Image (cartoon, rainbow, N blue to C red; front, side, top):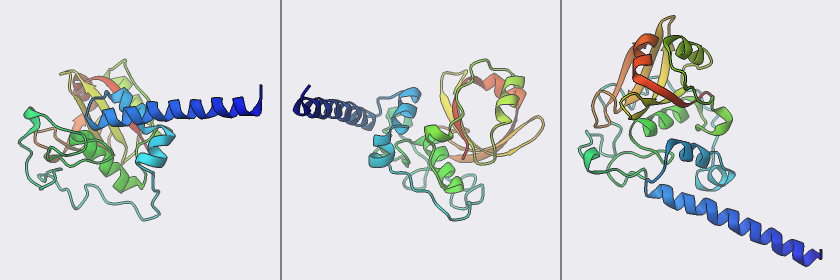
Length: 211
């Protein structure tokens, strides 16, 4: 095989890969994605180096809850309750939700807080993986590897996914910091939940991230 043919093949492969990833990027702009596709997308070199380059911060960790988002505040562009969720939202925030890292509402908030507290974004290298066998005991074991500032994402037994940030752990449960839980309007809040209660809410753990 001549050097010219090798070069031509390499160029063709690079173009195909670029078109495939950029095509997915365009698709996510429309909000047409699953949790699994989103996690695959943000773990690509294309995303980390081009779409949303990761910037590691040497600054001290922020305190939790963030002073800019106390309980009762809203993770929205105008700082007020979102009233448009039922009519449709877009992950780029054009709907009025505040967007961070191509995500909005509970996930956007958790991604944002994770970055502010840990100085890095949620990517594949700091993820912990799934959990499908849900019991209070299995959740407690899973949470043993998570720390304050970890982002926990799950599919609810009600069919709705949710994310929260861990602010503390006890022998019986966790303290969490979240948005869009107590009401579907991006309100920020905190709660303490036992593993027994959490097991009734979680159908499966989608992923979690720990810096």
